[in-house]
Structures are given as structure tokens and as C-alpha cells.
Length: 337
Ligand SMILES: [Zn+2]
Ligand SMILES: [Zn+2]
Image (cartoon, rainbow, N blue to C red; front, side, top):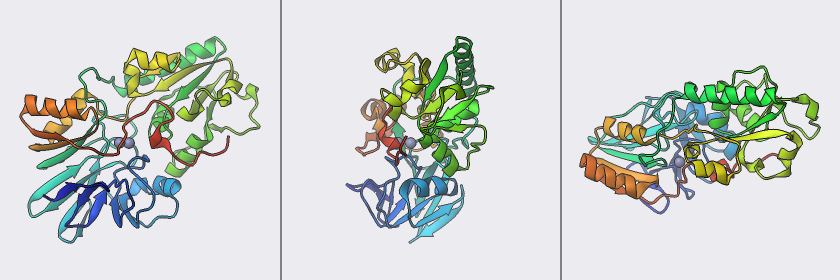
């Protein structure tokens, strides 16, 4: 077998390379810059070129080689290439081929086009490693346009009542989608982590206000605040009173998740595949052997075995999927507020 599941992570012995290892190794291929996939301490990194600036911002001074999508490199006879995963900017599926054996490690992915990230493309293989963050039939996400419409209506309604709109989402991926989706004349203030992440990504910040401790209430009056989950329940939020609070996450499909967070509103916006997306992606690879990681791995692998007669197994990893707040995949150096 070309790929093994080891204590350090997903390993290709022939090329002596790990994909998204969770312990420091010599050679790591990184599918994307979320921190449960891109960890510090590896001697050498390989990633997509659009991940370069964000990886350097998050991991500091690393030895990094980058590839374009479809570009191949050869390591000890193994042909390696990266393919769009549609998850966040620079996210890639890793294809490895050796003597006719083809594996695809998809990292995190979503099949629906979000209008911002380069869309997912299925890659034919015999062995496919898939996530299953939303691997239950109840997860059926709306199209991006529909969510954007709801988001824009909500911020306008709040403004009409003199209320600020506080929108919570990850700094990498979600924040850029929220900002791309907002069509408004209201002032938009960004939490510094989001502002700085945008800067690292080369995402245009010129229209936004960066939060500083000198912030004056009148700056918004009313307006929009986009922040990470780390501010929820913290005094940081109080300065935007009166406000309404919304979360952007796939979990917002569950009423209870929103209620537990005391959110006024939940937008079903996810960077992961929903139930149909997972099935579509798995079938499009034509792979007979499916390895299911983070999420509903036991339910989803069982479904693939019973419904599609695939050789599907669950695999233990340290990947964490999508959180709602204080998410571990956002463990970046938080700037002082
Ligand atoms: Zn991710
Ligand atoms: Zn993940």
C-alpha cells in the first residue's frame, strides 16, 4: 500500500512524506492552512502556492516549496500533484501515484461553489481519503447566493432599527466569504485577526475599518462587525451595543446549535461538503477504497459500504472538522485587542 496511517499522520513511505502530519516530521505536504492540518515543526513543507502567504503568516519561518494545481513533482518515483478542494483559499487535494496505484488525500473540501474559492474538482483514483464533518443526511446546505441574500437582508433590517450587526466566522475562509457576500453601504469593522488574515491572503482590506482600542462607537452608527468566535462572551463585544449576533457555520442548520450560542441568527455557511456533496465527491473519484476521517466517520463509512458497496473504513486522525466558536482550527497568534 502506498499510503499508511501512522501515529504521525498519513504517510507515504516510498516518498517518505506525510500529508498534514500532527507530529513534526521531515517532509510534510499541507492540504490547507487551518491549524489542525498545518502544524508547526516540520523541516520541509509542500503546499499550493495560494497557501504560501497564509502559511508563512501562521507558521512563521518555514522551508516551503509551492506548486500550482496540476503541476507534478516526483519524489523517489512517486508522482505528486495538487488539485482544487474548494475548501478555503489554497486548499488542495493531494494525488499520489506510484506504479499505477493512485491515492487522493482530500483534506477538507466542499463541492458547492462559494463564489470565492477555486471550486472542487474530482480526481479519479483507487483510494480516496475523505472527511465526513457533515456526513449525515440532515446536512443539506443552501447555495451561496441564497445565504448571501439572507445575510444582506439581516444587516439591513438591523440597521433600520439602529442596531449593529455582529457576524462571527473563521478568519481563514469564512471571513472572506462573508465579506465577499456583503453588499452594503454600512461601515464594516474587522476584528484584527481577520484584518491581518486578509492582509496575509492579499484580500483587499481598503473598504474595511480595522479594530483598534481607540475605536469610537460613532464609527459604526450603525454598522457591521466581522469577528472570530474568540470574541463571543467576551467584553470586546459589549462596545458594539446595541447589536444583533449571528454565526456563520454549517452547524447553524441545527436549531439547537444556534440557541446554545445565544445567537440571534444563524447562517448556514460551511466550507465543508454536505451529505450530497460528500456522496457526489466520493462517487466521482471512482475509487473502490474509501478511508473516512474526521466527523461522522463510523456512520458515513457504514453508509458507503452498505449503500454503494465500497470498501469503506473509518480512520482515526487528529483532524477536527468545523467548530462553531473558539475553534481549534483558528489557533493562530491572536493579536492583542
Ligand atoms: Zn479546514
Ligand atoms: Zn479538517
